Picture: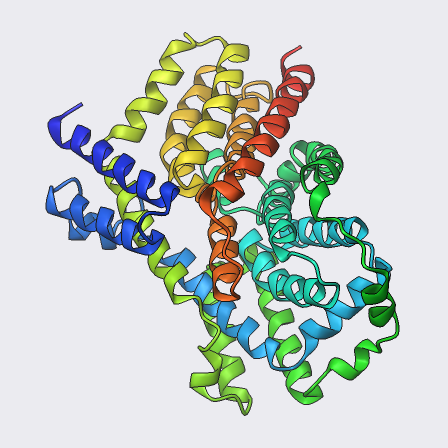
Length: 430
């Protein structure tokens, strides 16, 4: 590697250490790291702000912005209070039952939508229901972020890395359902069982609080029915457009921004009210992180690491699959899984062709998808959904530290990725 490449690695590791130690606010660390990357010419303005491969992913930024505005308007209708009371009553006030219910809803929604949109919608409900039952919301939020990453792995539209893989590998929506969804169901069952163990200290049942919630009428929580129907109509159109992305060819970011604009224009909500719930620090953090990771891509660091892993397998399909699965899990925990998959997909495409391009060789695509999607659970910055959840938690006065998330995420990632290894081996390689 060149001197600039080594310098970029040093800057990234230092910024990452600051984020992990929380000695400096994560936004300051990400922006500072991005600034230094530009200063040492590890990247430049063109590469950082305008390149699809090495720059800020504006599709992610504006997808988040649009959905945050829609969620902010929805919040004023009282629908989140309605859903919170409904969920608490269905769980009969039992904390573990509540977590299972919220986790399953999150996973299913993440398979149909993208996982970032799902956590934006489910987090406000979580805060409200936990407040009603006098529960700590942090374990529920962490579990939901992880469930969104696991559930999102099931479909082409569930997780952004899957869209990149499908485009590069010529894979369809049905391909993901057939090859990914069955294992995702197994992983969710295992994850629900793990939640019982990982968060067991948080499941404190309060009979009095539960009785109070059971006596509530969730319909009384709705504050503005007209605004609710207007918001739900726009949200439904946005969701349909997300699902029909392969047909309509509108990027999710465009759909989200259009939906937000229509909702603000068609209702009595003022602009200041609409943007009040936008998590600006989260958006800025993402921008800084994208620039830092883009600098590693721009200097060839990520490609060299990935290529070295591929060369080490010497063309043996079984070994290549296992190395790719493990390496993707590790690297997606360190850098955001979106730029990682964007960098690795051309290498995997070459390996698939070298392996004959048949269904057996396509196991490499599924190894990349499982490793990247599940590896995103390992750390607080491994996946977009994790970062969004941390931002929402901080805004609501219950901050989640980097290590608080990561100590659970590492366990979940190791178990889920490990379970994928025999699945891939037995289904495609034996």
